[in-house]
Image (cartoon, rainbow, N blue to C red):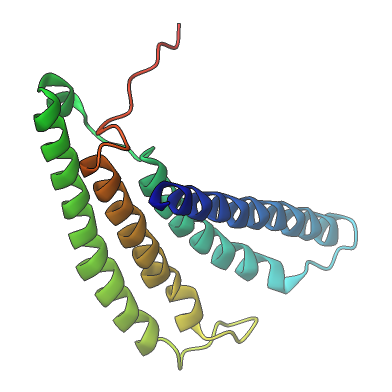
Length: 167
């Protein structure tokens, strides 16, 4: 049940990230077309691309935490027995949850709320809407890391992904 919920959330995130990337490609092509063919560049595309890149990167980081594909040093985890692997994987998850809770969720929320009155120069979008990507990603990281910890402790998820040969 939890494993399928986690997997569904990861698939949803991947879909949103993929759609965002496709939109970014379309906007970039439109920017190039209007600049070089029409000789009047579309002003909104640069700002929109910047904002969507921020959202895509932060949602992508949440996806990486959920699928455990983020950058990590697993040497100590690989060196120990099963209980050691579970302990370090749980500790790693708790540290990630702590950072996401305090730095990203609380700090990101405060930053987003303080920037709601500031408007972007071209599209006149509240900058707080852009900054909301940080607490949204933090919530997703907290949920996905919590699910990872629960599944690891229940024995339904391996503490670490086994290394694959790339030869």
